[in-house]
Figure 1 (cartoon, rainbow, N blue to C red):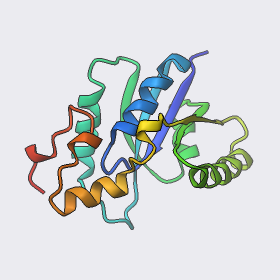
Figure 2: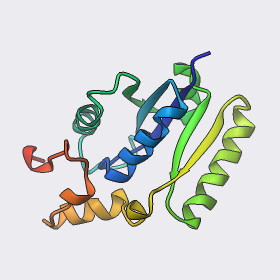
Figure 3: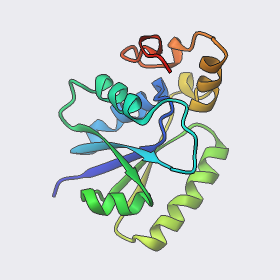
Figure 4: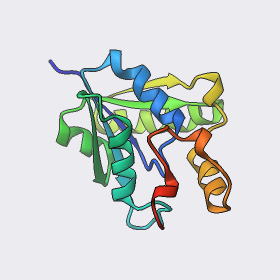
Length: 157
């Protein structure tokens, strides 16, 4: 049986913390699907197609990492792609409480899907997309928080 994990998120933008979680999870799974969630009620900072391209660039040399997009419930996407695992990163106790409640609700709705949590590395604990987005929005240099393959200055928004 192929062990497939879905790593869901908005990834707006995809950070070095996200990259680290995926790379550290690779030995645990046969395939990881980085699933960019689309919410029509939410205003994204970076266009969906650009985020997908960037993440594909980061993992271009990894045959077992796929980037996809979805709308709706994450567990429904897991069913569509045959994934039995949800991969999530935890930075803080607040993240744990939030992710725990979602994982428990997912378990009620889809008993066959397990949530797997990886702690972020200490260096990546303060890195989150919201803060990185604000740095970018106000003209700061966020490059140290983004994978080297992502150059936001190559794109006009």
